[in-house]
Amino acid sequence: MDIKNAQLAVDDWIKQHGVRYFNELTNMAQLTEEVGEVARIIARRYGEQSEKESDKSKDLGEELADVLFVLLCLANQTGIDLQDSFDKKLDIKTKRDHDRHHNNKKLK
Image 1 (cartoon, rainbow, N blue to C red):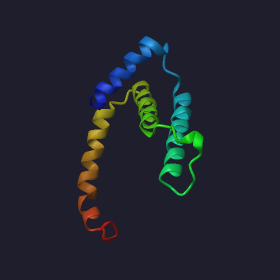
Image 2 (image 1 turned 90 degrees about the vertical axis):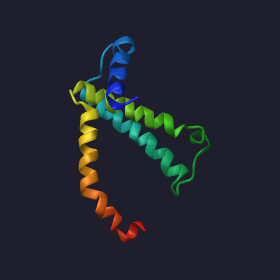
Image 3 (image 1 turned 90 degrees about the horizontal axis):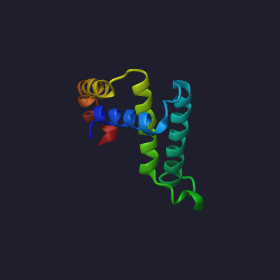
Image 4 (image 1 turned 60 degrees about the horizontal axis):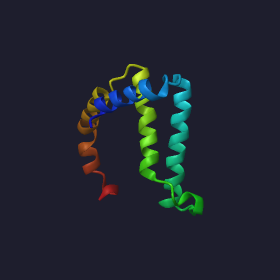
């Protein structure tokens, strides 16, 4: 599924199951909360913090999907075509960063 269809799927889900979108400020807070859950898993599973027993069953993919869902909600309710924005950003990064990263001795 591409980003455009993901936005449509989220919009359909909201209309069928979610009653309405939360307002943008609530969704921003929700996005921050979900990113925090991703950070907690990564810090403990891949970083230097010890992982609590209660965190070992947490699914990183599920938490990343939560971030994506709320991000798609924000794009929908603010009128952003995230597919178009992503494609443009990828083009900018490709032109700007290709040589820079290949010439970065720290990455070799």
